[in-house]
Image 1 (tube, protein in one colour):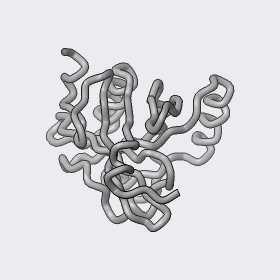
Image 2: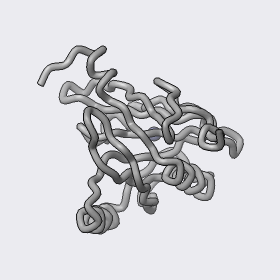
Image 3: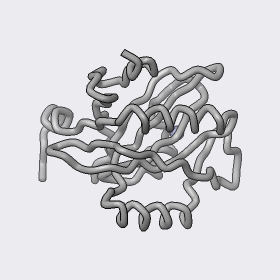
Image 4: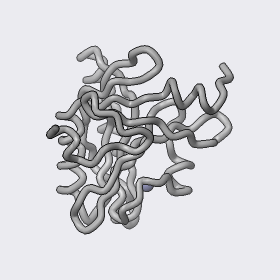
Length: 166
Ligand SMILES: [Zn+2]
């Protein structure tokens, strides 16, 4: 199905429950100085997705895990099975950047799973900076999706982490 970039933008929205949001940020902070990675689980609703749970994964990258990540494939399979049993589906993947930028790197773009959300949580000096969600199309182009945390809209960039405290 072809959608204009504008329409795609309108349709693609990632809603993240406050608990899952907090869990991801805590996981990223505890994994520092290595990049954290994990899987976002939930349901599809209308044109967007609702993230209800975040499964933290082991960063299995054989190289410098401060700059690269690889979700353990066996762990991913186990999470996939458990999610199916719980009636949830894999909506996307998250990982952290510790340089303060939630921009997709070239490597991120290459290894991103198509048709799911790829959310990057950026930190600098041990503090959360921003989160941005990217979806890679069949042509390899990345489109940004709006992130909404528990009903707080802060498109296209996610709100600061205290958004869930309002
Ligand atoms: Zn990255």
